[in-house]
Amino acid sequence: MIRKLVVLGGAAGLALFFVGGIAILGAMRPEVETQIPEPVAPIAFVQEVTYGPLNLSVKSQGEVQPRREIQLSAQIAGRIEDVSESFANGGVFEKGETLVTIEDADYRLAVTRAQAQVAQAEQRLAVEEAEAALAARDYEELSGESLSDDPSLLALRKPQLAAARAELASAKANLADARLALQRTRIRAPFDGRVRSVNADVGQYVTPGQALGQIFATDIAQVRLPLTDADLAKLDLPFAFEAGDGEGPRVRLYADVAGQTREWFGHVARVDAAIDSSTRQIAAIVEVEDPYGAGADDGFPLAFGLFVNAEIYGTEVPRATVIPILALQEDGTVFVVDDEDRLVVKTPRVVAQAGEGFVVTEGLDEGDLLVVSPVTVNVGDAIRPLYENGESASRKPPEPEADEEASAAPAAATGQTGANL
Image (cartoon, rainbow, N blue to C red; front, side, top):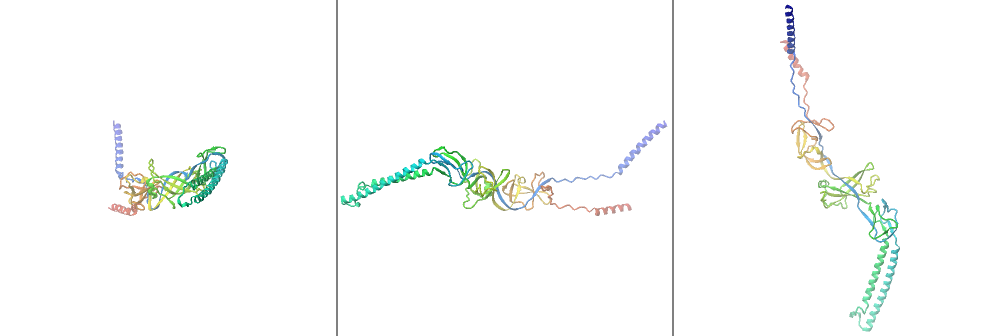
């Protein structure tokens, strides 16, 4: 019985010892300081606003076409006797060069016959003139009257003389027509150019108006570029614009050809006077001189039929900046970070759209931090501005750091005073 009491008492004492120890250790534990975490401002990407002179340009696309392109046709009938070596697909020819020759034997005979008719008509006219002179003299001698007394026209053979003169004029006209037909047996190039297609060859019989091939001039290449009303405003071009003696706005044409970007330069020659009812756009016609020669890019010609991109250089704005499309809100405002890293709103003046941005002339200050990314805070809230390369763009002055040595000295003195007490 005594042994059981001793065991129970020992167990109870051990339990009290542990409970007391835990209570003492808990009382000796330092109090935990509650710290409220500082809110972290969201990140926004920004770019610095800089003003400077800006050339407004317009981009468009179009197909290269020759200024002149015709169907080469025969004006007379006959068998083709000869074809020039230049008259082949892709052939090059010069103005006045004979491309097709039609057999001319029949037309030479026609010229000979016409010459004979002229000679006969001249002979008849000479006879009628002599007879008319003789009739006039006989009238004066037989009637005793002068020609001023208005004799009969038949008596003087004036109708016969007029008919002989008309017959001679007709014979000369027939001779001119025969010679013209003989000249047309040689079909010559009306300009310097190239052959697009050929529809006739040696031995083929052709009729008047029959197409022999398609040719085009190589002196000037044209590109029709569709433009909107806003594009015309940036280029300062009116409807029905025509360059005249001076050149219009300069144009850069470029395209990827044979694995390399080629470029050619021309100018706006004129603007259509009417708007396309289907697209509600108007076309500017760009001209490039000598596209197969001096106007070629390092010997690479501006080939007709090529689809090219175009950049038309417009007027220069003396002070402007370009902001990204994402920076402009639906209501025409933008977000800017102020010197305290807080979000503010400004309203810029947008004058045009340039590529993937808007041209602004006023409403923003030089050096403003323009927000170019979506934001999730309200106007006036704090924000962390970063440049697109990840560098901080904050202009908020840094907070002064606490002087640890100065703050430690009073604490040590206080502790020493407590110890003395």
